[in-house]
Every structure is written in structure tokens, then in C-alpha cells.
Length: 106
Length: 408
Image (cartoon, rainbow over all chains, first blue to last red):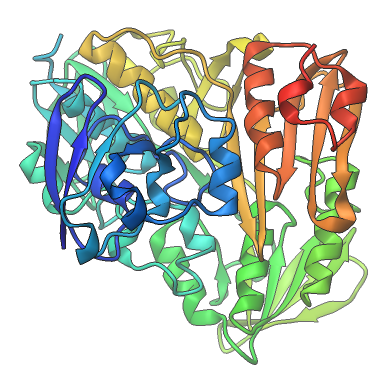
């Protein structure tokens, strides 16, 4: 279990307990948190679960995969700390993680 | 309108998403969600892939946890169908005999798998793949030593074939046309998928017209072809397309054209208090200046967004480029757009490397792209289609030129 804080683009914060094994994307979608669309349900096919990982969590959330990298390369508003949240698996290690959502997923 | 009483008929991807979005958008009125299946809304795409292969469980399929509906004050009613719409009284009649009044009605009744009206069609072991229950039956029927016949070489059939092979079954695909994906893809893509599947042990019978099923003790044992042969099998999956569930709408006098005809807000052109979303809707698609019906998750989500926005009084979502995806073996196929009015097909990359893209062009505009293990081509293709941006064909054909450089 990890407490994850999702911050909407307008600053609204949602702190949610997310079960190990789910993805950061699933934690948001299953709790009906706005700002992550996740059209493909986690197949890494759509880049609509884009988040910014707070700098101090970048190491623990790991590296982008090759597929993720090339999807993000063409998404809107991508920064150094951009990730596709369907590709980050939740574990105890990520307790306290903070991610921010972009203005739009499209 | 945020106090309006909303009834959503159909608890699939579209209906479930519309209910959740209405709450996200601040809709305060009552929401009822009517579904004919016994379980809460779930994702269908994994049924032919991760779920079938045992890599995803029921919890991960669910769109939302079961308790979400009560917590969000959504009156979710599983196992019930709507039998009639009384537009005068503004009420829906349900299969349990009750009548549910509405201010706003959303039809999200989806589509159903087309059955083949041929000899032996009711034998056991003749399966479809549309619902979790279908997938459950299919999962029980495939495995090592089993022989699966797939009728229909479309995307569902090919996904089932790939998963069937992963589970150790023998798989033969029977396709009426002389190539697979004949309705939806160009020759080059058909050839590529045929070769890739054959390499993984899938057998194909092309130009194979299925005339009936043979069985023993009530269970299918073979598929009969018009050329007189019988293809032996332990189970059959029929994937020959779907038909929109628009009968309810038709009976209520809503304009339908193989799907309920709606406007850019997903609102019925006949009745402003009724919306239709997802597989059952016949909708405008401005980038192609035409109307059509789509069967895809992204379409279901987009229209759920349109209807929920209109009901909650939010601005209409920006225009979208339709897209879809398919996973087979280690292939990721991403498709953007539809190949309408195409005068040229351009292939970028080498199919032999299993990393390439097929661009369908109308003049110098991209109408559609099919990208195999090629996310940049898909992502940029989507932008080009939506933005109606002309491309430099020479650059597009040269994989050494970045997709960021191909627009004129």
C-alpha cells in the first residue's frame, strides 16, 4: 500500500491509498480522480495518463521504457519529469509519491 | 441542468464512463445505470488478450471498484434490461416491470456479436467474444491439445488466435475473403499479419465460406466449408462483426441509420432529452465531413465525455482523431483515423522488421495510419490527421527523417 497524492492542474489535491501491484494510473482511475484519462486502460497505447512526477520521486519511480519514451516524445507539454502513469507500478517503496497532472491529456 | 434525473441504459465502457464523468463534472441529480450483465462496467479489450491469457483478473478489468457506485450515489442496477422508452411520459420500462422516469436519457446499449444463421449454430462450443461471460467460456475451451477454429479474420479473431496459441491450443482461422482484415486494412497489412501469425503457428483457410457446424452429443466437432471439407475442432469462436443494439431507440421513433443518429454533443437528432453514445451511436466526425458508427473504446470514452459535458453544462470537448489499438503476440498495432477517400498508400519502414507504418493519404493529407510497433508514427499521425496538416511525402516515406519533420 502506498499513499499517493494526485494534484490536478488547477491545484486540487487528492491523497489516495493505492494497493501494491496496481499502477499509478489505476489508482487515479479507480478512484474517479479527474485529469488522467487512460483511454487504453494501461496498454501503453495512448499517452493519455501523462503525469509529472515530483523531482524527489524520480529515482524511485524508475526509468521510462522504450515504448513509453517514444509515446511521450510526441505528447503535449512533456517535461524531464514526465511519465505515463500506467507504467509505474505501486509498491510500499512509493508511499508518499506526489504526481501532478498536465492541463490536458490530448 | 445539474439536478436532472439521468438514466443510462447500458453499463458497458460508454455507460459506465458517462456515469462516472457526470459525477466528476459536478452533476448533482440522481443517476441510474442499467446493465443487462450481472457485473459492474468493465474493460472489454483485455478479454481477448491479457485476461484470456490469465494475466489480468476481474478486479483489474473493472472500470471502478464495485463500491464506487454506492459511494458516488449512482443507482447501478445489474441484470436488468430496458424494454421500452416512453418519450411522452419520459420513462423507461425495465425487464423487471418497473418504470424509471428520466429528465435525460443516455442510450449506451452497445452492439452484439453477429451470429451465423447456419446449420448447427446452436451446438455447444460455438462461442463469441463480446462479454466477460463469453470470455469465461472461451478460456475454458482453449489450452494445450485443444483445436480452436476462429471464424472471421478480423481484429477480434486475430487477437483470439494469438492468445489461443499462447495458451498452447492449435488455431485455424477461417476467412471468407481471400485475405484477412479485408474490410479494415490494406493488402500490405493483411500480408504482414498473415505471415506473423503463421510464424507463430496459426493456420489460415482463406476464401473459406462456412456453411455449417458438425457436432456430436450436442457439442461442435467441426466446421463445414462450401468446398466440401470439414475443419475438425473442439471449439469455435465466431468473430464476423457486430450489430448495433438500436432496436429500443427505433421502437421509440428516434432516427437511426444502423445506430442512433446523434449530433456533436452525442444528442439524438430526434429528441433533445436523449443521448446515444458508444457502439450504438451513428455520429458526426468533422475531420472526415461525414457521419458513421464506430466500435472502439476511445470512441465510447469520447462520446461519454460529450454527453456528460452537455448534461453538466460544460463546454464541448475539443474535436478528436478517432483511434484504436490491437495487441497480438509481441505486436502493438495502433491505428489513427479511418481510410476514407484514400488515393495513395505509403509504407514507412520495412514490414520485415515488424516495425513500420502504413499511411493512407488523400492528396497530401493523412487520412489514417496503421502503426506496427511504431509509436512515433502513430502519435504524430494522429496530430496530422486531426490538424489536417499536409505532409511532404518524400520525407514521410523515409524512416531516417523524424516524424517531427514530415509536416510541410
